[in-house]
Image: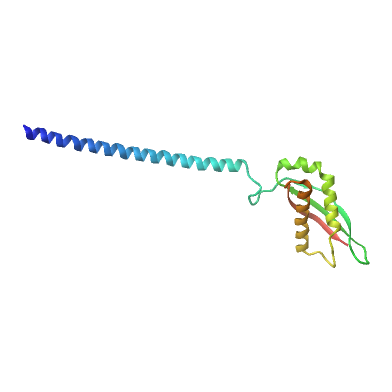
Length: 161
């Protein structure tokens, strides 16, 4: 009889231990599954949020464009009189920059006229020189606005004579 009681005691702890191991395994798998679902859904939400609110710093993102009237300026030369005619489109950083830029438009035209009239041309303006002028215009306009509202300047017409 004592042997029967000992056999029963041996069986019960093994069964309890097996149940604890199974429950722990199920709990670990459940927690891992929940974590995986949360991570997958979180990644999807970020992609949706990024698509809904693109930034202008991403390649291919174009800010609002402000087309300006043509500029005609006398160029500094020695004996002969040269002039430049240029049409410019300004790219702003975002839609919120359009109103302040338009408010300052006459002052921005003045800045551009001053910068263009200082361009020194010997024979023909190279692409490298045009790129430098574009960069200078961006820097000077942002400086005058006291904010980085201008992202880029693009020539849509550029003639010297």
